[in-house]
Image (cartoon, rainbow, N blue to C red; front, side, top):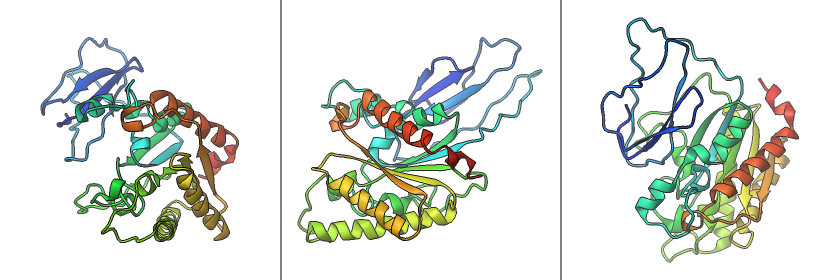
Length: 293
């Protein structure tokens, strides 16, 4: 079983999740099941940047039989920062301690899983709180999202590869951490214009690499109106550049009017529902995306 400071949701036959909080390494038994077909899902609700976690699989009692898991025919990938993670989305207050952020973060109720569930789609969440395209939150250190994205772990020892992962839709939200705080002395950008130029050029390179690996995927880049609209303006510029370069399978989705009632002014649970709903509306208006395979 997974080991670490995680909250896991154990879902049996689609019933409400049973929480498993900070599980110790070991074997866990699921009992009380009758001799019929059952499905068990394990979902990680929290974000962990500290160390890798592992799941050793299921041991089936004598007389039981492992059934082939039905493959979902749609795939959606979500790339982003804490907004995509679901950082503090369960909180009723914007003021949270570090422990409260951990306890009130539930990625299973964030925009990605909700939108994917609407389409009965398999999904990946590739998001890291505090990371940007060229600048992390408040100029903090660490790999940016495009730097970390190709790898399985932060140590960069193994690149991620999966021959069957070919998402029809890739949803990206990056820029909040690049622009939500003022530049500080010592950072490599002397002006906001320099930061804008670096952001746009780096984001374009990241999208070019994503497109090379996902030639038919529909790219949705979304942003909120926080920061006097700076984030939305920059993301719109990147989308416009992609379209001018000949990529017509990309669009910009502005998300305005959120409450940001979660921890540390992050999207609340209701905000996450709004974002998911906007994504569903956009995808529903472009049903041809599901024909890309």
